[in-house]
Image 1 (cartoon, rainbow, N blue to C red):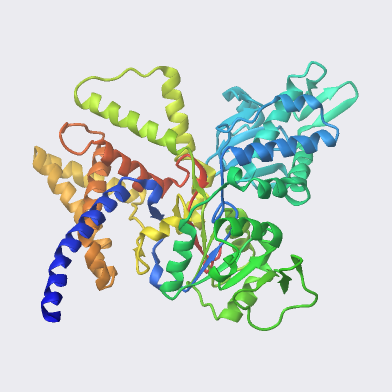
Image 2: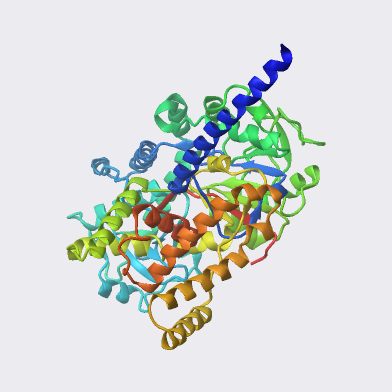
Length: 573
C-alpha cells in the first residue's frame, strides 16, 4: 500500500511543476515589463561575494508617503521661519509637489535655482517661480557655466529631504521679489526696503537654519510617530528581504543617523517589536558622513531610556543590542570585512558616498537607494510615445504644439539625460533601482553585468564600417549583417556562460531574449529609421528601452526617488 502511494504522489509532481513554471513565466513577464522591479547596473556586482548588507532607514527601509510627508516638512519649515520673524503671509503659499526634483543647484548669490549638467553648464534657471530668460542667464553667468570651486555660494539639493527645502527657498524669493515694499538691488543679489537690505544669501542661511531645527529639535518626528499610517508606507517585503539575506549566509546591519526613539518607533511599525533580531548589528546616531571618515566611538544604547550608556563599548557588537556612533574602520576590524564584501544601502549620495570617497580611501562597498519619481507621469509619456510611433509607422504624424514639444524636451532631455545628479550616480554608483526590496527578485548568486558602452571614436568607426558595407552591398541584408555583428560583439562581452556559474544556465534563455529585444530597439533608435511597421516598435519594447537602457545610463529618469546605488569605496577620486 505504501509503495502504491509513492508513485501517485510523484505523478502529481509534473502537474505542480507545470503550474509553477507557468506562474514563474507569468511573474517573469510582469517583471520584464515593470522597470520599478528591476535593478540597473553601472558597474558589475557579483552578489555571491557580498557578505554584509547594510541598510539606512529613512527613504530606504522606511519610505515616506509623498506628498504627505513633504507637506508636513514644508509647513514645519515655514512655521519655524515665521517664529524667526518672517511674515505670516508665507502660510498662504501651498506646497507644490511636482515642482522640484533632486540634483538642482541653488545659487546663494543671485537667488537662482539652476538645473545644470554634470560639468556645470546651465540648462534651465528659475528665480522664484519664474523661468530665467537666456539673456538673464548670460548676464549673470557669462559662459552659462557655474562651478563648485566656491561651495559656499552653491547649495546642492541632492537629498530627498531637500525637495521641500527647495520649494521653501523659491517661495521666499518669489514673495520678496513681488512684494510692493521691496525692490531688487542693482547688483541682483537681494531686495531692498529703504535702508534695509535682504540678501538672497541671508535668506538661504535662515532657511537652512530652520531646516536643521525642524529635523533635529522640532516636533516633526513626533508628528510622524503619531501618524505612522499617514506618513510611512508599510511594506511587508522588509521581513522577506532580511530573512532571505540571512538564509543565504549574509549578515545585515542597520546604519542610520536617526536617534533610537525614532528608529524604534518606525521599525516597530514596519517589522515589529523584535526588529533588532532581523539585524546582526543595529547602529543609530551614526553621524554620517563622519562615520565613513573618522567617526566616533561605539556606545551601547539603553533601550529602556533610549540614551547611550556611560563609557565606550569594547569588544564585539552583539546581535539584539543597539549601538550609537562608531566608525567604518572599527566596523571592518570587528567583523573582518574585506574589500568588495560590504554593500551599504542608503539614500544620500553626498552624505553616504561622495564625502567619504573624497576624504579617504577605504576597502568598502556601498549601496544607495533613491526613488524613481514621477512613475505615473513616466508611464503616461511612454504610452504617448508608443502611440506617436504607431501613428508614424502608419504614415500619420500627430500634431504637437510648441508648448507640448518644449515640455517634452524639458522632461526627457533636461531632467532625464543631462542632469548633474545623473553624472554623480554614474560616477559613484554601481547599482540603482526603484526600491531596495527589488533585490528579492534576484537570486543570491546573481551577477549584475554593467552594460557595454562605446567611446565616441568607436561610434564613428562603427558608422564608417556601416557606410563602407552599404557601398558594397544593398538592401536589408546589409542591415542584418551589421546588426548581427553588433549583437555578436555584445554577446561576446556579456556571455552568461563565460561570466557566470552553472546556476545561471536556468536564466540563459530569458537573458538572451531580453538582450535581443533591447538591441533591436537600440539599433532602430540609433538609425532613426521607422521602416518596418510590424516589428520592434511596440509599447513593451519602448518601455524596456526607456527603462533598461536609458535609465541605466541616465539615472535621473524623472528622479526624486528611489535608486539602488552600489558604490565601491576602494577607488580614490
